[in-house]
Amino acid sequence: MDTFEHKPLEYLKRDVRKRVEVYLGCELEHLPPRTMDAIQREIIALRGHYRDPATGGWQYGRNRPRLVAYALAYYPYYVELVSDAIQIASKEFVVPRRWDLTPDRGHTGTARYAIVGCGAGPELYGLLRHLAGTLYSSGNRASVTPDISISLFEPERERWAAVAEAVTKPLIGRIPWIEQRREAGQIRIGWSPDPEPIPSLSLHGEYDFVLIQLVLNEVDLLWPTWLSRVMEANLAPGGTICVIDTNHAVHDQLRELGFCPAKSLSLEWSEAGPRKLDPITSSQVFRDADGLIERRGVKAMASFWENAAIRGRRRLPPRRMDSSRSEKATPSHRRRIDLFG
Image (cartoon, rainbow, N blue to C red; front, side):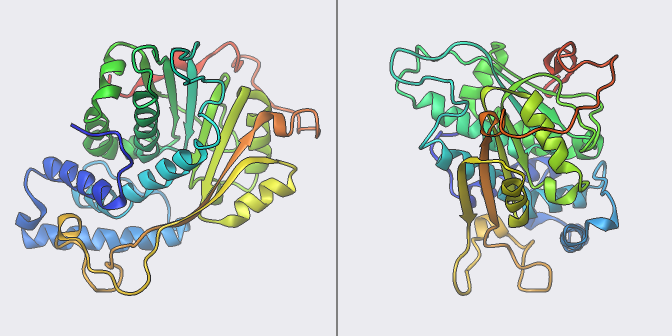
């Protein structure tokens, strides 16, 4: 059973490794040499792909070594980024901001979240860990009855489905506070069916919190226009957009467009000098060789933007919308595919 305190990266890697071993049916140390070699080759190839996204989209599907490579080399770091960003920001404001978590007051209404470009779901897991910690430890557990709706927007959902099934769903299932409320219908999580890529993506409806992590730097250059429309059409009053990216130019461009952040963070996990790898997490997968040195962390920047920051201050580009597919008339929570269905 998970606790709700913040977990260091090493613990996250351990948890992911356990899910991987369940998926493989054995501990990593007991894998046949050929399988271990295949996983290491996939780690090197994946890192090359992420350095040069022009190499094309990668399918996971039944490619077990590739799935394991992504889970061990990338997944924990993506969870840590969003968990840390929201946790640090929540010291100054609650997410969503209209919630009142003071004792005996609770909150009312449905809190709606959207995660754009969620891939296999590390951002979802990071967000749920934060929500569990915030609500469960708020000091008024009996009076806080959450009603949470989370919509996942991923244009390439099928290629990530195997990782989500093997890693994300079991990890979420180990947070009892979340599981109890999901089974009671108080927390609803679902894929938006057939979402289009940015900048054509439509979020359908209003959200209190929109999370976009490590996406904008890798999509069409028209993303600023798309994000302006999301800010105008898809944020509820008091809503917030969280942008996390390793490229600081993304955040600079947002400011140049007239966006004013409610909170800006610089996130970095690094250690000076050589680091002894923890055998609990690194096993025999990572070694001191080209492309296989285990990461010490990820450098990124997170910024939180409110709809009120630009509304009424700048003229937004006109929205193009198919008249047969109104955003207001087709709320995503009625159309989406249940993650646990």
